[in-house]
Length: 325
Image (cartoon, rainbow, N blue to C red):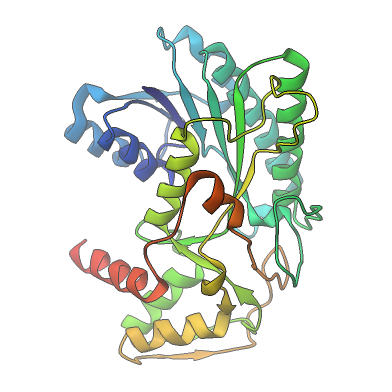
């Protein structure tokens, strides 16, 4: 099938494009002009040739994509979202622009005849919680980032309902992902660098419950949501009375949810107990002292997803990938 991937140079976007390429799909990789990570797509072009097409396009122009792609596309998966770092999560103007740009992408998907649109939402939509997070729970986001993700979900459903589009909308709420290519400021990447170098790292209290999912498992979950047969998302064409919100928590199983200190100390041990760590120094991030306690039952039941890579295995893979690099 023909697949559009927006944000195709991102931490998840580039390997997601490769996952579709490995399955024999043709990928249109939408990248903003001047992207510093364009080499990620260029490497895929060198390997897969004409199977991947690079489109330099601003997201605010995505509703005009049918003027550029001259063939129908079956699937659109959307990672294009600026300001994911902790500081920018508080910036209302940046996050509101993301909502508008993502709606342009949704309209572009409709114009191409896409059957399904998969959106990369976030656990930040739930807000501060200390109990199990289920997809039908009310959302009380505290950051502008989380609020914007919820706002887009509501706007997307409203748009598809009002226009009568038969395209499915799938909203993935992605929890804490780690792996090769992760942001340098993430906890896992910061600990990896500090411990392997024998340095001290200053941390927050790290007393909250947390759930980490390795990047490749996350990609497989999204791939299953994208390609699953049958109805998995919201569509204006659903039978009357059928309740389907199309939301899925994308996270490791409930057994992987542990105190964050457990994860820190595991990384320290796997790095040979080098360096040191100090709790209680750094302030909480934009979401505050949030717990991540996802329920993944719906994802298991609807598309058969089960994470294959435990945290210790994933962290060792990360160390090895950085050594090779």
